[in-house]
Length: 177
Image 1 (tube, rainbow, N blue to C red):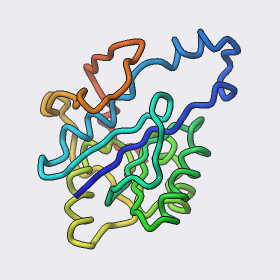
Image 2: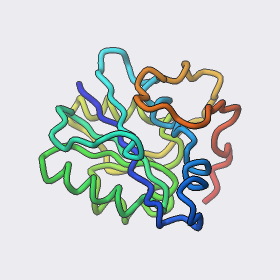
Image 3: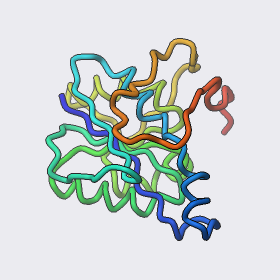
C-alpha cells in the first residue's frame, strides 16, 4: 500500500510575524509527527512525506491513503487538500491538534480522523483500511511510550530544515473529558 503524508503550507500572513525572515526562523522547525508515523508504519508499505512549506504537492500522486496533519492556522488549507484528494477518489485520514479539538468539522473533509496522538492508533488505522473496515474516528486506547518509537524516518524529509529537533516527551498522559 502507498501512503502519502502531508503537512499543509503555513501562510506567511497567518502569523503575527511580518518579517519573512523571522517567520522562517519561528516556523522553520521540522514537523516530526509525520516522520514518526512513517517510522511506525510497517515496512510492507511505501511512504512519502510532503511538507508544503518546502515541497510541491502533486494531487496525482499514486497513493492509496492520504494522511494530513494540521494545526488550526493550517486547517483551511488542510481541508482544501483533503477535499481535492477525496474528489479524486483517495481515502483521507486527518489528525493533529485542530482535528482533535474539532473532529466533527474535520469529518466534513476526511474519511477518518485520529484524535490525540496518532502514534498510538496509526497501525490500527492501516489494518482497518486494509480490511475495508476504516472507522470514522480513532482515539487512543492505551498510553504512548516515546521510548518505543523507532528513529524518525529522516530519509523522507526532502528539504533541509533550519533547525534540528529532538523530542524527549510527547502529548499528555491524561485522558480528560
